[in-house]
Image (cartoon, rainbow, N blue to C red):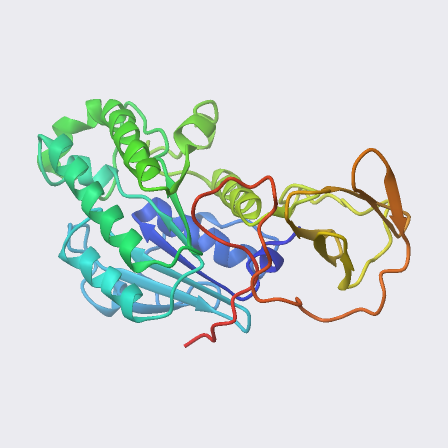
Length: 352
């Protein structure tokens, strides 16, 4: 299952700090190549271009600094993908309001991946809890008003930080906060995850996922290496696939760990067949199911598609004439999907 297939004709917005910038970069890279980010790519910020993307605002186009007012907006656009990144240091501010206005009056994203925590709880106030809670409510309230129900919003909890940390956000005047920042992050994750869930947003707990992977954290105690970021991308895409009812027969892979998940299967072109109470879309190992809750089991073997409508299996050996693309702009969600926001299927909105 490739990222470019899952995100075909999709608009993805990534909001957050330098870690979120690396999330954006790894996704942009994966949409084009089966490679990991280099150390230089992970450390760079504000460059004019990264892997065919462009710097839209801020960065090297203006003053480069480590202050709270640093701006960086990046965008990658291809024939079938659009990914945009906004660097933010606070979950709700005048700048965030301007970003939300861009979304309100512009093209609506299919996926929003957002996190804001470390800067919020270290750079603005020594008593950050009340301010952070209030800003979370303001952000999610406004975001839920401007986004359509089909948009999938993923709030990612902050990754574990080290006991000894250093970074661009940790200016000398707040170095005394470094020793307790990792505990503050845990507390902030609890608040932000609770608020996001209350607004019906999806929450991915990266703090939990990476609690035993600290060897992939860099020496500054805050950032993470390329292997960790590919794992983050994999978790995000797996979650998106599940939310859209897309079956991923094999996990996301990259150079050095590629797996042939169709070794025992012959190539299956884009095909379709109207079946009782469900529609199936097939492209290589990419399968999407939509239905009203009946049926659901599926298997591929020896170029044949086996379907189950209950206790028995039925073999479908003649898929019919291949087609290019999908039949409907927004197929129904998988019957087992319980997500409250977000939809599946390619969008029909043109890129602008």
